[in-house]
Image (tube, rainbow, N blue to C red; front, top):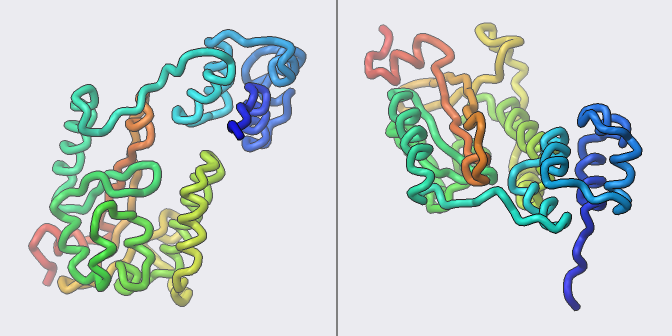
Length: 264
C-alpha cells in the first residue's frame, strides 16, 4: 500500500500541540485571526507560501521540518540540505575550523543534530586516551554515547551523576523541540547506562551558575564549564543543525594544566 500523505492541517496541528499552543495562542503570535488559522488547519483555506513560512517561524519548526509543510501545501521545498564539505558551505566550514582552532589549548568540538562528532580541535585527543572501548571512537562517533558509556569517558567523570543529568536534560529538551525519533532512541539507550552515584558535592565556585564537567586525567583533575554556539541566520538545513561545543576551564588549575604550565 502507498503511504498516506499527511495534509497541511495535520502538520500544523501537530507542531502547534507540540508547542502547547492553542489556535488562539498561535493566531495572536502570528498576528492573524483565529478564524483564519482554523480555516488553514481544516483545509478550508490555503495559505500563501509566505504565510506558511511565517507560521512555521512562530512555531519554531526546525528548517528540516519546514519543507514537508511546504510540500503538503503544494509548494516546492525552499531549504537545501548539503553535506558540510559541499563547496557552498565552505565559508561556514572555515568558520567552524577557525573557532575550533582558536579555542586551543582548550577542548572544542562540532556536532550535528544527532550529537555525531563532525570536527574537533587538537585539545580533544588527550582527553580520550583513557577510553576503554575503542569502538566508541570509530566513526561516526556519538558524543553523548562516548561521554556516558561505562567504557567511555564516564569512568573518568568524577561528577558523573550530575553531568549525566545535565546531558539527558538537554537531550530531552531537544526531543521536545524536534520530535526526532533517532534522538528518542538514543535517549532510551543512554538511560540504560549506569547513572553514577550522586555525591552531594557542592561546587562552590560554580554553585547556582553552571554544571561543571570534572574529568580525572593523567595530568590531574580538570574542571570545565561548557558553552554552545550555533549559526545565527542559517537557511541551509545542515548548517542550522550544526553546533560548536566549547569547554572552558572552570578553575585556574585546569587552565594551567591545559596551557602546559601546571600550578605549583
